[in-house]
Length: 430
Image (cartoon, rainbow, N blue to C red; front, side, top):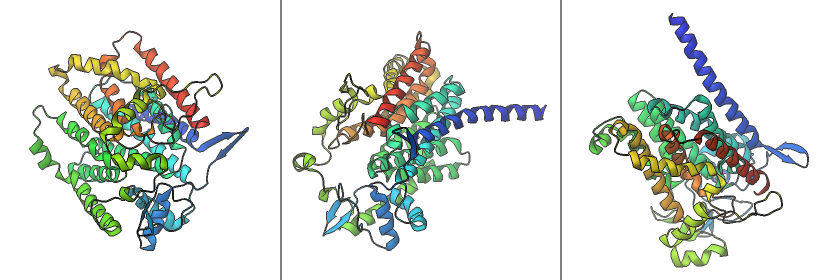
């Protein structure tokens, strides 16, 4: 009897992971393959990825960059050149540069991290599905993985190897690994330390990822009927320890370069003339940018044309919900949450929804207050930073949303439409 139960369990795991593997490999192949003039190739060239040059600088014992193919978007201080991006991706590149040299296939490496993201998304959703009874079947989770991999801006960003895309994709990898470890590892202190390490890596790849902390608090909140913040801090201090260590190291890194613990180099940013005037007037972060960025990155309709590929290039992009229309299901999901938020039987589920909403909101406020929308781009690439939490809200609210008439075929159509739109962007508009 025991053998039969174990065999049945193994078959279930194999079936689930088998479908996830198919989705992951499909995304990987579409990330690395290029279809041009009837030929299929793989891009193994080096791109404008300053993290490689920073890794090389670290290996040579200095902080400033050496010769780079471009000075675009760098920082110039005391006649030396630096990056303003946090340094974790450069640390990741150090062993690669030390073994293979400075000419690396940036797009291919970025695709590997992007493929990890697709796998991680499905594994996290599976855990959430089990823990919070979200009524999703394995094929539903796989479809969400396919949506994330091919139906969001993650698709075209995974195919590029420049510093801007590498930063975002790698930050997602670290965040998803942090969430997975936080939810999946059983040993408490091991769980907190490993998850905390990846959380710190995410925050020091893209600093505003520190604002995802409410989601981790929500995970613990969902486990206790009477949540106590002081108790949470006392029991989970190990989680934040790596972040504190990274913060101290980053402060030294800033001081060693610019003589200021809190200066990352933006003050000395070599930006284009398009941004320099507004930077002098409003700075890099300002609520002045918020209305324009909110409109452009969420609501702005893409410029359509009658000629293939039917969407015109727009350097500022357009609203992410038009690029990934599956996200329109967020509207009924949030409406149903508001309608049922006082349901005492759904405390755990709604704690997770609140944590997802708060993390997404805080990150969106920062993103929409940044000078610029992610120039040059397809759709709205900055919004990828918080889109994972929108997916989780849909997962958590699915037991309610699924009761809407015809919602399942509508959801499938919206996912397929998202994939078609993002495929156009990935193949023809980037």
